[in-house]
Image (cartoon, rainbow, N blue to C red; front, side, top):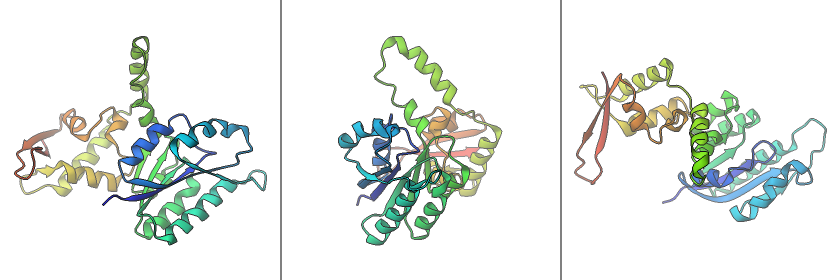
Length: 246
């Protein structure tokens, strides 16, 4: 059964350029049955959003800024989220914003057993990131949307990708190593699926794509401190991947 998601977008805080990639990413986690974007549509800075709303079936919600310096959009989005929560029509929420003002909302939704996925830019403050079950950086989606560029731009694209990729630091290696130990059997082997799930719980913004790898397997394989083993799966044609610390 598909997970029904409410997608709530902070239009004042998120660029429209990669909405297609954002919606494709959200579709991996469930069916976006409610899609709303909040902002003051009388303001020129939201003009770019207007052209992509219809093609992505996103409902614009008008919210005037009543007071200078106060963000009325945040309040409208939070009130709507609570209304949707109590309607019992969804199983989870996708909050698209880089604003830490949604930290308490994410926490409250999770307290109500809702799955909460956050999407925002790398400038997003840590409190909002850790309040979500999973947090995805828009910069990752930008990197993955370069496929249709012409031959002359490919070298440039590769270079810009390198600049956006995070380094695998000793801290990241320790996090993976400890996580493997946490779920390993007596021989030290851990099922990669369990490792990935626990990494996500420990660090919601952990994503192999942050480090330039599409999947966790090649990322771990690139680190000399770990070894990988493929095992036959009697219930499927796909092999099971196990990892352990060297």
